[in-house]
Image (cartoon, rainbow, N blue to C red; front, top):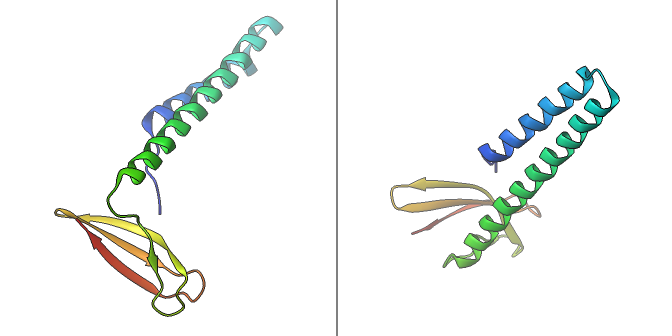
Length: 109
């Protein structure tokens, strides 16, 4: 399942990239070290923002009335979600079994 990148995380990564470019172009050691520290700070900020986004997603999934998993009808192993599509007022979950390869769909309101 593909996720849309968080625009805030992308902005922080772009700023880190720009800081690295400025460090390469720096005329003095002091200026270069400053920009390298800025790159490091932007990278740490992007990691923190990405982590917060993942924690929010995890918390939201815990509050959901239905856990997005299913059991394979063929081999009785737990199936993994491959896609989630929103259709009108329902979410359609598509599952795939890693063990036997079978597929299933479930609709949740």
